[in-house]
Image (tube, rainbow, N blue to C red; front, side, top):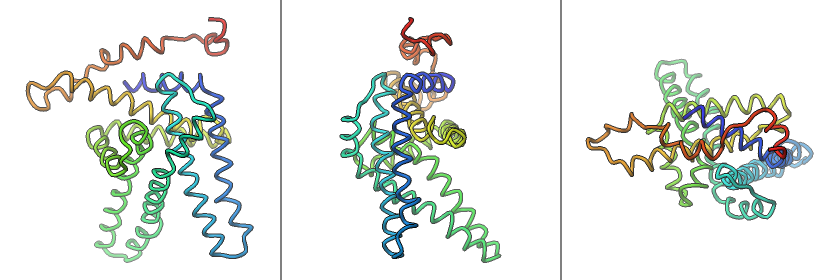
Length: 260
């Protein structure tokens, strides 16, 4: 399943390369607001306000991007009008997850160093608990935008489902986080143009979409004994239709698709 996920993400990303680049360019432009604008504002409270609003806008933008990229992983596409509508649909979850991420990183940067500075075993244990809580939250909430796009608009349910996905698929969730980190690190050397945030969001949406096929199969094939089939998911059979849709390609197909 992992191999097919990587293959499908690459194929869909290649077929929509211009769209991914445009999304990444838009994100880079959005990022200039919190990175550069506060430095030219002499009044500190106003500078901090612009920084906070700029960060929140970046998360709203990512929310709209995730809603748009859902169409790509569904073998479709999207246009400017779709992206604009998705901004209007995704502003609220974008703001909410922006605040949550801010609080999580405040835990990492402020709370953990405070407990470590106590120089005691108790302080070390508290710091360790907070660190692993942070890692649990990050590994689970990486699916936030994809869950919001595919499963639910109720944000309380979105958060619950993110954690459910992690606890039911911990190895898969850790792999997805690792892939996202590698994707963003590679993107740094390519000026964040490609694969960039759009590539990471596309992968996570593809990952959730394919993982949900597992639950469709479990619903159609109830366990004769509770839990007996959860470790025997027949991915080869489940993915037959998906493999037929994406097919196989040669290097010529990638470079000169119009010659097929």
